Image (cartoon, rainbow, N blue to C red):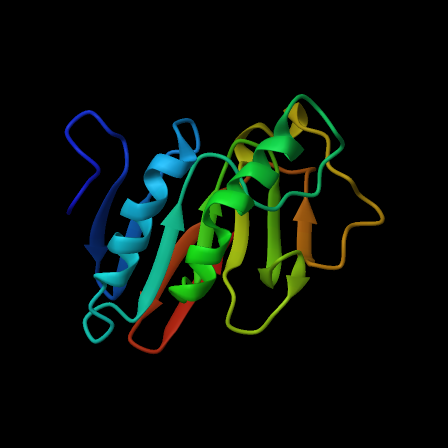
Length: 164
């Protein structure tokens, strides 16, 4: 699929009925925004009814304040959230934090039908990252920072499923 350039680690591809856009949360976010917008706009909704954006760092996270993780989440939201909502992205998939977290469809910090669901799938090192359980924010449908695991995405023409 198309990318930002030979030396830039952001690109797109199709996998069955899913249009996947991979972004880099470790590079200049503003420089990727026009490319991200164009990549999402170019999606053929007949061939790929589902849209997934994947990046290393999460945009939403229930975590105790460790390092710069909450600041980087806020920077990601400021740079890309409007594009993801406007382009009707179904799922933003991230890692970085060593837990499993899933939001409701969320935009601007509130549950909103039609907005992307955000998943943090970093269960491989669950004991490395503290989560803010109990008292989780209302936008989180599920948080698990106590078990190893993995996620599986499956898609058909009329459904996109994530399982752990």
